[in-house]
Length: 140
Image 1 (cartoon, rainbow, N blue to C red):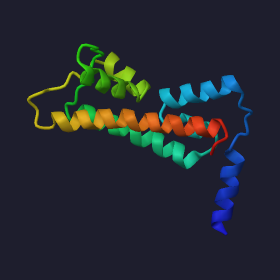
Image 2: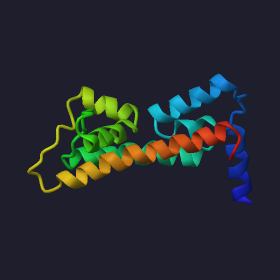
Image 3: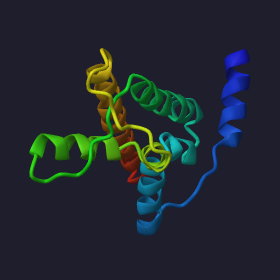
């Protein structure tokens, strides 16, 4: 009974929005810039809220563990791939770079753990973007 009430309220909050070609790209861009925004766009409030909170928190944990936001250095392929993964989180990456976070402390015991958190947060957001893209195309 209560679950029917909650489902009705959540269904009322979902906004039916026609998605054309441009709308699909906008959903992809929003989902990349703000983790969970694509799911929130389609009214999947619980998933969107979980992604909106969990991924930036994971990124912040990586920064607090003295992880490094890797620069794009094409001469070092693994560093370039790590930079691409860091870039995958969207706005939190831009904000951290602008505020001077993510220089990394190689001698810190937690340095590698911090790197793992930063890289995985970006890669997970890329998967969330692909999921939102599939929803926009009607595959899900």
